[in-house]
Length: 146
Ligand SMILES: [Zn+2]
Image (tube, rainbow, N blue to C red; front, side):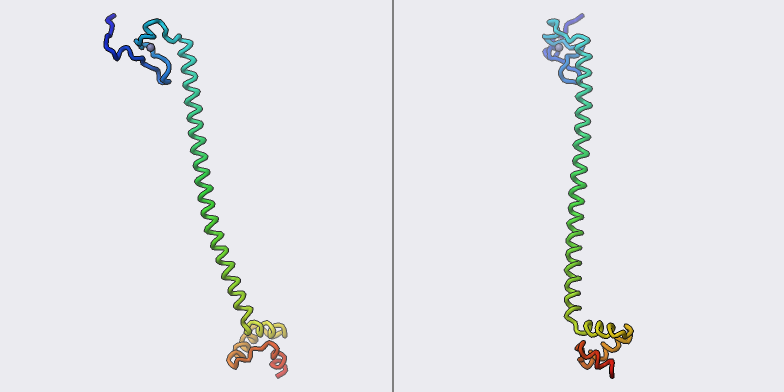
């Protein structure tokens, strides 16, 4: 068998694991008789396969964690938007409540309703008194007797 005298021929050739010298390796070490045995090759192959499985599992775990992280951030952002909207709604309701509380027409309407006046009639009465600016709830009794 002709010897390949190229310098490249003396560089080690490795299996896919990057460690085990191939069967056709002609490096100095292999030429000197230190070729991996079949048992070495089998063990190295098994280690390589296990390492690939572990790395694939680690990548899958990293992908799952990244997806979970993205979901958590998205949920956080959505919650932030909802919380701001809810706060705004509460603020608007409080403002509306404060306006209604300060409106003498509402107090008059409530006073009229307490006397048993139907809602439609009470609204008409409130409207009538608002025109004359007589909106004191204390005057409800007078309206009732009149
Ligand atoms: Zn070799």
